[in-house]
Length: 131
Image 1 (cartoon, rainbow, N blue to C red):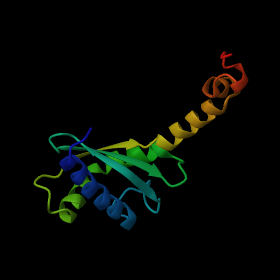
Image 2: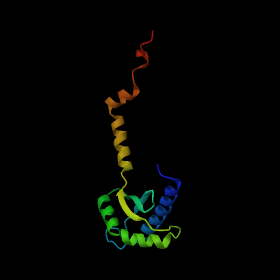
Image 3: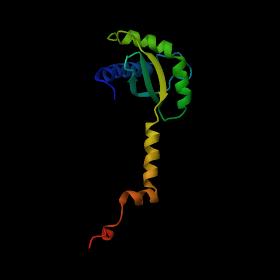
């Protein structure tokens, strides 16, 4: 569980990075003109490392986008420093692909399988064993 301070700084970083990426603040051809969503930023307890979860629009080429962002991390960190003056020091940026939506779909499909659905619903009302 993150502290209030980690959550607050994570949101500052998330908003700033979203703005930078929307404006095309990177100089990487892999990222130019590609819409990228930043759903979450998790800060380390000492606020020195920001794990940035990203998802390209449409979900295609996620691994390439993460690699391109990692290459651009130094420049993005500089842009971040210029945009967010409230931070004492600018955190190191580590990018990860956000797979929560894929995980949710997998879970939904697993729960919809007949064998799992039968276990979830339990025995029929008439078979309660009371008499």
